[in-house]
Amino acid sequence: MRIHRVLALFAACALAGCATKPAAIQHVVLISLQDPSDREALLQDCNRLLPHIPTVKSWWCGVPGDFGRSSVDDDYDVALCAGFADGPGYLAYLVDPAHVELVQTWKPKFNWIRIHDVVDPPDTPSNYNGGS
Image (cartoon, rainbow, N blue to C red):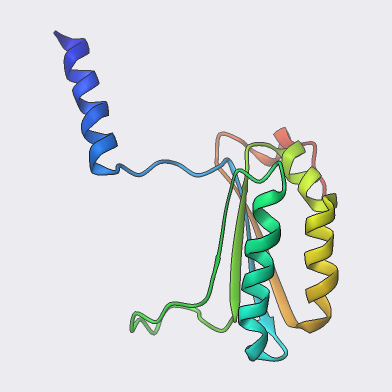
């Protein structure tokens, strides 16, 4: 009888769209462009290149959202996030030709870039054979 309750709970979550955890490593990048009118072209390149990198398990890119909150930092033009299962996957991404193309094409057009690598606590950075 208990197994039926567990299965019912899983089915309810599936139907209700329960949130799932993202990949263990999230590579979050905020970019300020020299010319904000380049925003759409950068978004198109991110959407064209990121999904084809084999070690990228999840990804998104977007622009600041305005929800009327003065405490939210929106001084960037484009944000992107790529998720990885593990450190070796992240390190492979850094040298993947699609990532290299994206960086080489767009870096000269940045005012600045902020990169934040966020690791799920059980998967501490010491488990990832580091890189900087």
